[in-house]
Length: 418
Ligand SMILES: *Cc1c(COP(=O)(O)O)cnc(C)c1O
Image (tube, rainbow, N blue to C red; front, side, top):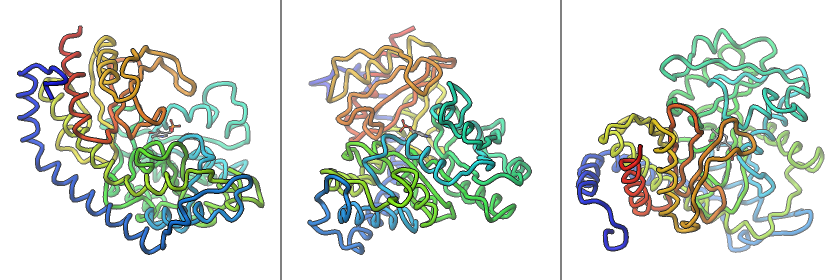
């Protein structure tokens, strides 16, 4: 490694200690990966994926065999009745927004039970911005139940908080840009049972971004009714060039499909162009890639904690997403961290990240990610809003070996910075 990238000897020594220390965690990652690779492989075999499914359609996309087969495979893996896996979804926010607009009607209430959701949802809900086209403008009410002091879900408050108009209980599993733990399968199951006990009619919706293949189960296997996420995160395996997914109960997926395309067209339209092979191949690779990303996160967590930084999750903590949050404590360190990561990326290593305002986010954000797919966060990337305590959110990594180089260089830079 040092032949190509000079890393101080002292740091390499610490890295070696860290790698020895995290062997048991890597072993746990391996067994989850083995389980999920087997699950995905079985779904491909049982669904009889053939060469003919790897090609796409144009125009209306009627009778797109590959797209339909992909959705069948995806549903099997997700433990869902049906799925929509589409190039026409531009991002995770679009997938989640499509699902919510699909299943909510005027007069209904959306209740987020995991605190205030991801920043980009402020405008979907109608909390910020001009409100045009928001759920609020459509007469859909919103409330959220705060997390407890320790960042854990408040089951009692959820039980009390569910009202007569609550139609959807939404659960965001990943931490997003917040300092709180991700929501494990076991916790998700508890939340769902509290909601269903109060009122079995309520739809449990899960924002599953960053959590696919991190554990051995997926949300529909523990009772979630509908889930959504992005294909330029975990389930695209670093190969899907764009897209999003929605999966769950057949009736709910149909409603979401009516919203995505048009009533009457639903799932039957939507050309897949030439991406079917990429979606299949990415999905097949996804558990492998998620395992690499998990290893990168565990390495970063252990190394940075050893160097005195506050990290979440801590090295031994249970993980439900691929994000590693690191409190860097100063804007200089946050920017230096991101710049070093960018400088050790395969694409656009020569670009120097600057903090910027980006649509959907409130604070200036600094982002690093020299990725093959623009904005992909299953590829090694880091970002953080410029607000105290200057947390870097590190995620992804198609190869642990690459992530290790970038993380070591980023650590070298923050140790040199104010
Ligand atoms: C990434 C993410 C989203 C969607 O973000 P996009 O950038 O629109 O793909 C939604 N929720 C969470 C928790 C996320 O991490």
